[in-house]
Each structure stands twice: as structure tokens, then as C-alpha cells.
Length: 368
Ligand code: ADP
Picture 1: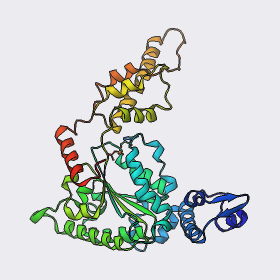
Picture 2: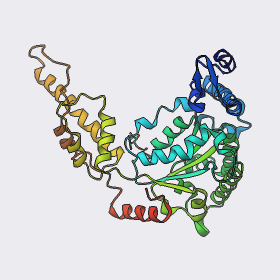
Picture 3: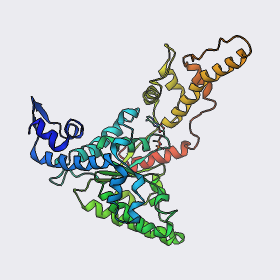
Picture 4: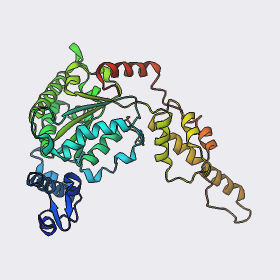
């Protein structure tokens, strides 16, 4: 295939998909790509191009009825998600596992289409304390896998459309199958599919859950559909066995230790004006028990201090000379130490909950 021909067929120069999914060897102007891979790439590129050029128009055409139309605004094409793996500090093992389980099969489906051993995974659970980056990982995963992203919670399917929860659930799956490759992110999966409510469970909720499970099973039996259900929860112990079984890979997203807190802090503070002697390791050691989200809040609180000082100085100078300055002083370690009293580690996750999570990880998780 010559470069010009590739350009003609799929807009080679504009599109990075071909290079990233096929890793072609470029010899001069000639690209060496297996025909089978090229066909997959062409069909994928056509889909991707349509979706990213005119997202709402295109999705509107895809939605077959009012139920499917409800999900149009929930779909984010991969190019518009805006989060990549590099934006996530630490969690290297999690990223590595997701690369093997999701990114590779979605980008290189031809490698997973034969035999029984290498089958794309259709259900993954991310579990761990709140604020550890599960949602962030889900979004970045869709970007890296070149997949459309649909995020749903319990209320997407129940609250507003209570009577129609079952139909809406069916529509979610039928609509998603037209957007393949797609990741359906179910945040707080325990609240949507948690342990059954026994005799007091609402009939509509029970039917919605059954429909969800049935549609999910239908999806699992279709090997070539690139749809992944990615669940996230802080309370995996509330999930019943039927759900756990359908999420065969369960990945623990733990609180960061000192070394990992340092990596996360480096990402947050990369663009900031820091004191040249700023000691990341000291700050990492001072923030035991902080989640990624807590660290972010701490950084925001600390970054506010030089601004506050400047405003105060300006107020004092008012009426005097015009010597107000707009140059902020660099951030130093003391700004963070002072801010710790305002932004502590999330209290919601006490030692008992952490123990429960770790035990669940030992029983059901990958132990990571
Ligand atoms: P969870 O879904 O686990 O409750 P989120 O993914 O919603 O947590 O994280 C909340 C915010 O915390 C993110 O938007 C991000 O700003 C920050 N955050 C958490 N963990 C990380 C991390 N490992 N790297 C970078 N930012 C993080």
C-alpha cells in the first residue's frame, strides 16, 4: 500500500489511529500492513471519523428511538475525553493491567480473535477508597483504547425514568453496541447492581437489574463486540455473587504510599512556581493517608496562600504609593504545612473500611 493510496482511502496524514493501532513499518513511502489489520483499521477509522466530525448529528442518526436517544449526551468520543494515562500519577500496576486487558484488545482486535485463551475481557471492576483515581482511570482508559466513553450511575437508569428503567437498560446496551469500541463506565456499581434488597426491593429496580444482567450476558457471548463494562466502587463487599462473577477482573486502586504520593504531587505541581529548594519527599512524607483527590485539594489550598498574601499587601498599600505588585511569590513547603489544617485526609475512609477493602481484595481481587 503506498502512502498516497492510504491517504486517499483513510486520510492518513490527518489520522493518527492507523499508526497507533497497526504499528506499520514504514519503508520509504511504502507501508507494510497486513491486509486483515488494514480492513479493521479502515472500518474503525470510518466510524471514528464520523463520530468525531459531527458527534451529536451522527449519534442522533444512530439512536433508534426515544430510549436510545437518552444516551446521546452521555457519550464522549475518545478524542474529547481530555485525560490520558500520563495525567495519572502512580498506579503503574493498574495501568499495566488495563493496557493488557483493554487497550491492546481494543486497538489490536485481530490478535485476540482466535483461540480460546486470549479473549477480550468484558467486565472489570476498579475498587478502592474514594478519590484514588478510579473515575480518572476509566476516562484515560477510553482515550488510550480509542473507545467511546459512556458514564452511567444508578440514577441514570432509575430515578428520572423509574417506570421505564427496564426499557432504558435495554436501550443502553443496544445503543452502545452501535458505538463499538465503547467503554460503559458504571460508577458506584454497588448502588446500581448491589446486593438485592430482599422482599422490600422495588419491583421496577429488580426488573432493571435482571435486564442489565441479561443484556450483559448477551454482550459477553458476542466475542467480536468491543464493549467493556467497567465498574467502580468504594464498597465491593456490597456486590452480590452474580455481579462479581460478571466482573472477572477486579483491580484494587489503593491509597498511595509516600513514593506514589510524590509522583502524584509532581503531576499537580508541574506547572507551578515552586521554591527552588522545594522538597517533594518531605511533603510526600507529611501526607500519610491522603488520597489523590485529597492531595489535589491540599495543593489548591496551598497555592491560594501567595494570592491571599498579595491581596492583603495590596490592601495595606492602598492609599499609599502605587507600588502594588502582581508577581506572586513561589510556593514553599510551609504553604502546604499550613494548609494541612484545612485539608486533611478524607475522614470517610477510616481504618475499619480500609481493612474491609483489603480483606475483599485478598478474597476476590488481584492482590495488587
Ligand atoms: P474516585 O473515582 O476513585 O473516587 P476520582 O478519579 O474521581 O476518584 O479522583 C478525583 C480527583 O482526584 C481527580 O479528578 C484527580 O484530580 C485527583 N486524583 C486522584 N487520584 C489521582 C492520581 N493518581 N493522579 C492524578 N490525579 C488524581
